[in-house]
Length: 608
Image (cartoon, rainbow, N blue to C red; front, top):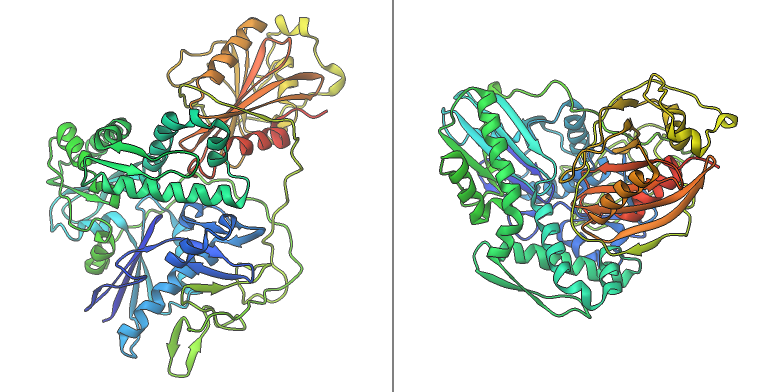
């Protein structure tokens, strides 16, 4: 039986074919899981996508798997369906495998995925594989079970330090997952971000404006410089696994920076300690003591990973020679009878509501090689689509898109555009570092009419609360936000590294990973001091601007750090303020202060 196992990871993709071993996908055992959309609609993948990213970085997505919960990825001016991006990667794998089959067919294709993924995410992988032309039996395989299959019949733990997240699973001797856990802010990309911030503290003073252009590129040249620096940081991280120090080449006008292994380890040690503590907690929940801890993911090459596990857990972990390929290799030997899949998805994330597109799909034909040759020549990624998809580093698509190209006529896939943002922002440099931790709660709807807007004096003695916890003043500050539900009173506002903020607090869950807390304090000075303390704790640069609406006026300040965005806003002359946060899976490259500010102005700021 011919079995192909494919590990489509956040950073890299690996494939293993039975009776052959690891497949050379893109000049090596790993292929970058990246895509680039040409202006003519051709979708490039792997290293070719990386090379072309310098032409127009806005058309490049290095980690499409991070968008698994979204419908589309914005590449240039095009909203590309996530399924198309993932299908392009699978199609490239299929093109590499086909010559090795000698005219035969695949009997089974095993697609690995994180153990905590439920049916919605798994089905997205399966549908993408079918779109790519994979016609054998598709079998989803949890990554932890794949790794455990290489460890024999013993209880073990899988420590998966991936590019996007850290995941841990504890399995029994029959490879059943007894307990698992994850940290969304601990991954290889977060290590890269920590290095970026570390270097920024060393060089940004030379040209603050130039550094801001690296943090938030505007021109194509800015984007190219940022991509080049990101690549330098990735290589530096990898080299520091073997060398005591490395030189990081910087774009002009900055000079090269020397980074030592000790500096890198100081940056990541707190996160590794958290991962070890989660491993201990997961083992306790599982109720078994693992005989081995298997390390998975390229970041596990850093010596400090094994050192921290040995110190904190008391087990010397098993570090394979090739941690990047262990998942795909393990999937080859999995006993399908032992595979157990999670029945439910994690808490669903907001998916943008679609609008109707009136033009049907009409993919262009591009590239010189078919996805998978058959006895009658080439056949398309999806035979119901007119024209074959090319898979020799490219994957032609033409906007507008359909989720299922076999559906004739129109299909909803485009989304409403944001209102134009106000051009009143200015960029400031911040110091320190803090992350907001806010509760996500569900509440009822409460309406507040315009003519009853309270005065500043009334706010000082405002104590009566409605069912959601809003006082009249807080409801004035909240504007239309409670009208969508998702608001509930809370005990206090929590800011990591700071004392609790006392007062009347209401938490609201909005959408797109955004949450907002409204706080009524005992005085105007108290509100301003609390807001100032939060703003001064911003580690990176921040955006600041004025706002008006609903009879109020004030200022806001926004910043992002390691994938978390924070915006604090005050109301002039009122003893209240608000904190908007986004706990995003995107890294800091994708989550910018301007984006947080735009969301505030369009969706949170009280209307005029």
